[in-house]
Amino acid sequence: MSAPFDHLLEATIDHLKREKARGVKYVQVDESSLAALSQAAPQPAKSAPAAGVPSIARPKRPSLPSTPQQPRARATAQPSPVQPSTPAPSPSRISREEKETAMAQLRERAMACQKCPGLVAARQNVVFGVGDIHSPLMFVGEAPGADEDRQGEPFVGKAGQLLTKIIKTMGYSRETVYIGNILKCRPDTPGQEWGNRKPTPEEMDTCKPYVISQIDIIQPKVIVALGATAVQGLLGETQGITRLRGNWTEFRGVPVMPTFHPSYLLRQDDLGTKRKVWEDMLQVLERLGAPISDKQRGFFLKK
Ligand code: URA
Image 1 (tube, rainbow, N blue to C red):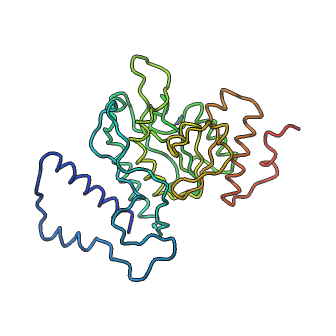
Image 2: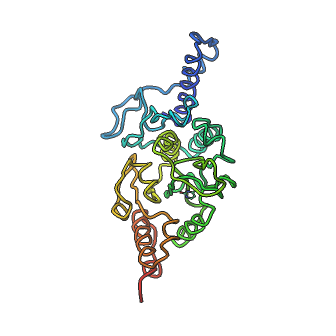
Image 3: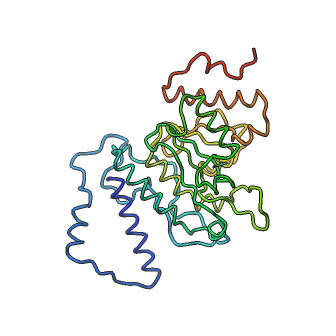
């Protein structure tokens, strides 16, 4: 099934659910729309799917979770009905155009999201994500801070500048990887003009379908989860990042490398911690099959 078709289908279902909630019992669909819909529907597979590949004609597709549902108050936010379970999306042969269309549609929905009224009221921008959606490498952080909220781009503040440096040292650039967050809006700090706060588990659950969809569309070869909150948001894993970092795990079939958040690195600022992050990045490069120079291997090693 094509991703644009999935997204259209999900948007239609969401729309119908909203209509139903408003008390609408019937919708009118003219003949030409019906004909167009039946043509757009994917045909059942003719041959048996390869081992381990889900059937094309599956009725429910967990891989591209529907995004926004009803607007929901933060206080009453419930985990999304589409649970980000571990099953991997089908290894679809999604074309570049399909990816671009799907991501553009997802972005549009995220930009208009009203699910957390507190965050909506406080935000200046929805911080959707940035970079190359065809990249094999995706970084996932926790949530935008003040700088990101102002500029509408993830990781542009001090921690972001350090992340950019790490990415460059790996041989990539911000333009050749994809960078996103679990939360697309800055966690509000009512009553104070400054500072950041950690996203709540409810906020992360509410926003998680967006990052899941981003992952499913991008289908990166590796995800780097930045910091304990990102790991918790993505994997529900509450063990400390000190324990988790450096050890491969998996999310929706994609290898995930947890590592320290760049803001932790800024606070620590010692060679040992920097080296640990760098070792994690070397593992990432190895997994990607990217070339690693002797100079890169030697970074942050005491002479
Ligand atoms: N920290 C994050 O986790 N994400 C950002 O975008 C900025 C800082």
